[in-house]
Image (cartoon, rainbow, N blue to C red):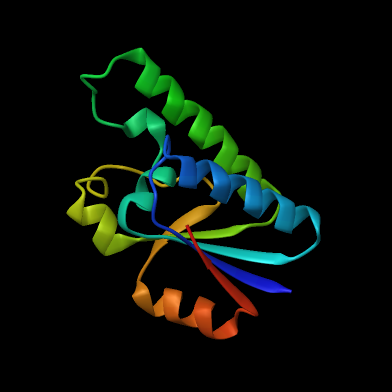
Length: 124
């Protein structure tokens, strides 16, 4: 089965945690998984080492490092991940930042293709 996940929640949100668990289970089941990170979900695909300094302290930095490891694990197990260029730019994340290895920046045309080719679409 081919699944398309629309990730709209940032790391640290319960919906993001649910997304990561669901994608891992689908990959373990042998399904093809594609992820389009949109809206606040773009933060899940931007590298923590490039994150702007936070007033929230080291806990936030650690959360983003854990997020990087989790997303890299999903990519390493076969998830294809695309981050929305417009959403990243609108959140100030795109300029001077890099996406995680194995992921890439794309556009809404790619989301359309993912949805059209998927057997099931999941929004988180």
